[in-house]
Structures are given as C-alpha cells and as structure tokens.
Image: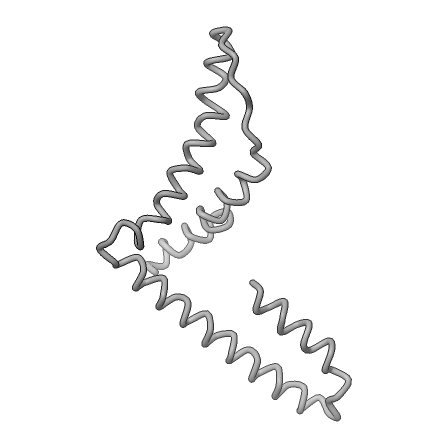
Amino acid sequence: MIIDTLVNAGLKIFGGFFTSDEDKRKVELALAQLDAQMRAGQIEINKIEASNPSLWVSGWRPFIGWCSGGGVMYEYIVRPLLVAASIHAPPIDTSSLYPLVMGMLGFGGLRTLEKFKKK
C-alpha cells in the first residue's frame, strides 16, 4: 500500500536523526498506529459505499468484476471458439487485465481466507 511505502521512505530519510533505538521504536509505533487508523477509516468508507442503494455508488465494484470476468471469458473461451470457426477474433491485452482480476479476487485467495474466518 502507498502508506507502507511512505512510512518506509520516511524511516530511511529520518532514521539518522534518532539518537537511540527507543526513539526509533516510538516513531515506528506512532507510524504503525497512524497506518492502522487510516486503514480502518478506509474500511469504514468501503462499508458505507457498499451499502449505498444507488447503483452509481455501490455498483462500481461489481461492474469492474463483471468486466474483468468478461475479458477473461472472451480470451479463453469465446475467442478460441471463434478462431476454431475461422472467424477473426483479435486478442486482448491481458497484461493489464490480470492485475485487475487478481486485485478483485483479493490478491490470489486472501478474500477466501477472510470468508473462512467469517470476516
């Protein structure tokens, strides 16, 4: 996440200013608490957004999911069938599609783990 990158960069830049390991640990703890607060805030925003009755607010995630699934279905099911039927079907660029699909799926199964833990 961007916050992790910024925290690590800040520690590298300002790490020389700490006079003791205890001071460094205090700053790391404060940054970790700030990161946790920001993540919790984003989770609350996501919950509110997902519960909104307006399709324009709550429907963007399913829309992206259906578009991503449609792209995968076209590339691996529809296009091979069209090519087998001697119909020209241009390929799609899956290099930009797969990061989106993996993100929607929870980075390779993390969402499944959450479901098992009832979260």
